[in-house]
Image (cartoon, rainbow, N blue to C red):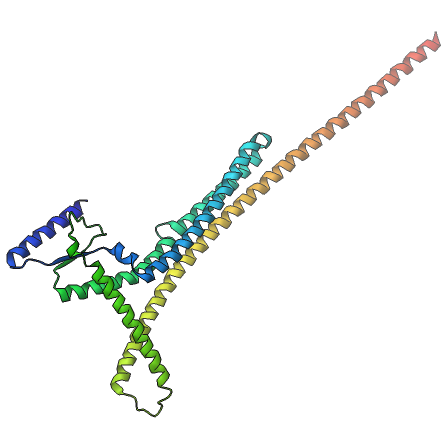
Length: 306
């Protein structure tokens, strides 16, 4: 906020100085970048496609969230019927899914996510066109300053007569039409050169053409290199996330396996203990019967002697 105020005060002082030095005063104009973007056909089409993507991503996120919410609801209802080990397993599974959902949200809607990157890539070419048009208009109309009304610079007042947004739009549209005509002319030239094979090439034209092709090739190569680096970074992030996810799944499976083994061992120990109790009971019963038989035999012998 302090930076904005200082910038505004500096501009006011500059304008005052310029007005003092020039009879006619400084020429100041402004544009509304948001208004320009909303009226550029290429931006509208690209923005519509991007919004459709964003809606699909939001739908996927909501679907994943609904699954997690249902799992939590089921666990809450069945908690009293489950052992502590099973409760821990389900809670850990829910935690893994929540972390995956958070990662997916950052990948799509984070500050470096797909939505932000694609929006920047979409706006950048149009912003470059606007900047070029503003520079041309400022030179022709002799503007000293041109501001962006939709930017962070605070405009306390702006008269409509200084708004050159429509002029910028007309300049951009003319450039688009000019490029369209140039493309048609090039297409016609490419078509006609096959019909005029005996015509000698113009060295100057060929040199300009070669220089233009080399410049285009350099731009395409730079763009491809940048795209490759960005894709490499995205792939590295993806691989890292997959490795982390696999490590968590592996740890979860190992823990689950140990819990099952411990449960089976506990069950086996209980079964062995039960069997041992039954065997001890049988042995005691057999010993009791044997002793009873011995006692009865001893008593019967003494009776016969009397």
